[in-house]
Length: 122
Image (cartoon, rainbow, N blue to C red; front, side):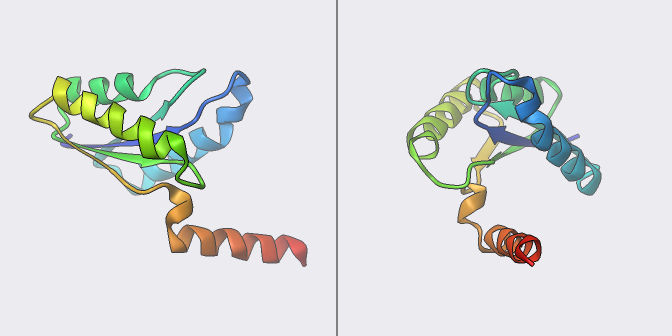
C-alpha cells in the first residue's frame, strides 16, 4: 500500500464523541480500498497525528494525505497542524506528507451541509 489518508479530528474526553468520525473513516476506506485510512486526534484521544503518520510510514506508505475534520481554519489548523506536519516531515524525509484545507472551507462540503439543513428544516 503506497498511500495513506489520515482523518484528523480535535478529540474529546468522551469516547462516544469519536463515533461519527469512525463512521466517516469506514466510509472513506470503502471508497479508497487501496489506501490505508486512519483516524487521528489533536488531543484527548489516540492515536495522535504523530502516531498515525508514524504508523503509515512503518506500514510502507509513500504518501500521506492529512484531512483536517474541522469546520473552520482556527488556530489548530493555522498553527498546530503545520507544526505537526513539519515535524513529521523531519522524522520521515522520504515520506510525502500533505494536508488539505479544513473540510469547512470546501464548497461541496458546505453545500452538503446546507442541503441537510434545508431537508431537516422541512
